[in-house]
Image (cartoon, rainbow, N blue to C red):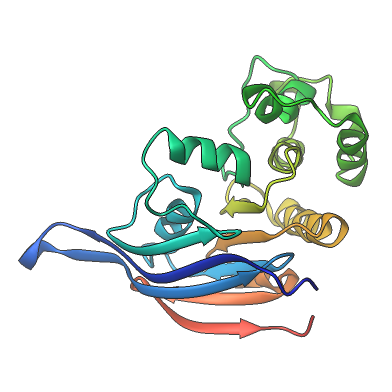
Length: 230
């Protein structure tokens, strides 16, 4: 495993309201994640795990503290710089897939390249769809796909730009048990085959067995950080 630190968080707070009505969604988190690690962030609804993911992705700005991705401080960026940072550094797998219904599987996968005006790496594209076993889905539209097939397309879309980090936001929330396990196994495959850094949030402890590290969040704090044998 590469020992390089890809994500470094220091003294991170996200608060809402003031004084008596203040709520600390994130309450003083320090965190380092190595390149190529598959990290599960586990917590109940309202624990702060989604807020943490949104801060890492730049969808939210912190109240205080720093977030650095591959040595670049992203926590003080303003729009549209945060959007550019996210486009260049982060792939996101959503719970509801977020595929565009008017685009084919192929068009959905390569959309991040088109938005960023980047050439599609055809060899890498072919390798991804082979690894995810979706060669037969790239000409179909989302309405012609099952939930599991849609999520595989969404994973391919998250990987296509070689992002520094893939954030998976409850990626199995819309899937049955079998497809949930398959989806997390595919994320693990991406980690192993492409040395991809994966950060997945989930409330399902069973799914964390595929990750290298499990971070438990409660009331906006990290209460346990377990590193498995790698």
